[in-house]
Image (tube, rainbow, N blue to C red):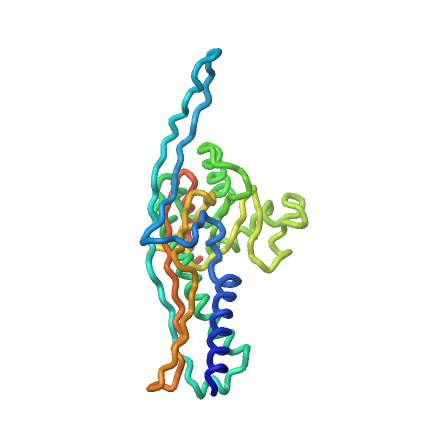
Amino acid sequence: MSTSIDQAFIKQFESEVHAAYQRQGSKLRNTVRTVSGVNGSSAVFQKVGSGTASTKSTHGMVPVMNLDHTNIEAVLQDYYAGDWVDRLDELKLNIDERQVIAAAGAYALGRKTDELIINQMATASTNVIADGNVGLTKDKILSAFETFGANDVPDDGQRFCIVGWKQWSELLGIEEFVNADYVGQEALPFATITQAKMFLGTIFIPHSGLPIDGNDIRSCFYYHKTAVGHASGADVQTDVSWHGDRAAHFVNNMMSQGAALIDEDGIVVINCDETPD
């Protein structure tokens, strides 16, 4: 195999990993505040308090709101996902098989991205809805909805709720969630294969990586995009190197990312019982 062919293999592999990560990797990265290209070991997100409008006298000074500013730091960590590709195996691989290997690395890094975000959500303790020995119910969703209203969380299309697959099945049993008379034909959960749905001005997304404790209590999260921050110092990169002693390429996928909880008022933890019937 000539050097040029080997380089073509490497470049194509790199592009396939990057494309697979963007297409299939993280479900949650675009649902939170994100900053890319961070230089250094951490990123700082600004949390700004609410201001109050006041009157002023003629020719008087404009009143200052004196907004409360808080710095929230997200520490970046480096993550790797590598594997060997044997030279003789390469000869037997077609394009589809190489894409499978590329997607595996992208999926691994995508799961880690979501894990970082979910771990920060799990630290929220201000607004918690108890499991009550039941799963996800309409009353729990409405309770979270009311909490957001009381906390003046914007109803601007940037509200999200991630639930486990058990809870997604329970949502499908709520008439208001699935009946076109309530949500319209275009918003039915069966109308798309993306497994996401708008309900009560909130995008509901099923996710397999949500925490569950020893009592089969699954934590779901109702949150606003601005409540959690995700920082990337290096997006997914791929390094492919030849090792003659192994007669194989080593494919190393890597990234440097971190996450931080910015505003607990913008997150409601909904605990749901998954105890088998």
